[in-house]
Length: 463
Image (cartoon, rainbow, N blue to C red; front, side, top):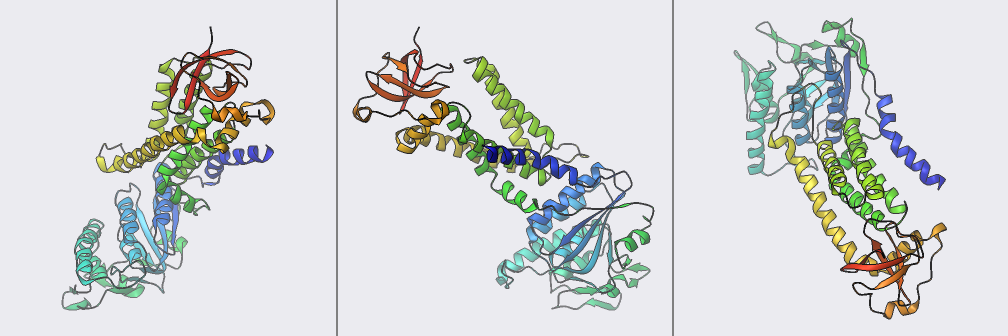
């Protein structure tokens, strides 16, 4: 029991502990977030969390500390989209490498600074394993994304031809009569080439800097404190939780169903709480939700429990509670930014709609299977019976019970375990798993069969 309580407390306090370790951002601070190693969805989560915090704290600048050879083009597009919409001035500091997807992300920031020994470029699309992809598919990808990244470069004041030359080796780049990138070669620029001026303007980078503090000084942000964001150990967990959200929700719903079908608060209830805590904790870490959404979910749970215990049969409280729970789960998966007005666009809500719909379908199918088959399984019968009796002492099930027909409608019997709402009752000398409809019934009280649904016997107290 102590181990269960310790695990529960750890899960309950995890989001708050993460919030306490997050750096405090004050107006005017310079926020630095790392992009090291492979560009991936996990990197996207880290940068999104940091950028949201920078916007909410009214930071004076947001700096990406970059050292990557590339990675997922899809993740790069998501990161680029974040940067293009930022209300905080954005910078990239290339500390050694900005290859492939990293080069394209750098174009999403307003200013680029590079370490004296560093390079940027070579963003041709390749397969997940690094191999060349087919000529037709490559042409399609290059055609679309070169236009996309040209647009991003132009918006931030960079030469759009450079963006295209990073990804398309057929693109030749010339400034006046000088060839910057010859045809049939992907463009890669060293720090010295990137800062070289043409017609009084740097080719790409604003300057070279030995470090982040040097960048801050050169950019005129010297008086601003630097706040560094580090990815937590839960960032990758957040990735899997958000991807597998329908499974966590469905598991939590099915375990809650089992808990309501058995008396007391047992293993199913604990596991259900764990599933929902992991769901909200993962989305909190990913920067998709906050404590207010979790609070709404808890309020919904409380309303359902209050009706179940104190006002059985009143539909209003449970309906309101379920609505709050579903609404909080839905908005936990919607990417809402603190400093931007909520836009009611299908692309913003589509992911949450798909995942919630999948979770509901899985829950309904799983619930139907549980109601149909689980009551007849020996393990489930023992579980229900053990949970129904005080101290976990099981009541022996007479062998004759398995051979007797279930009690019919209107047949009277006696509860032999607490019905809260599930338990056992005896009819004509045979014991059966039963469920009371909303009321708690003590052992020894007379009951009557009110209805039967598939393999379940529903009873009420005999008046």
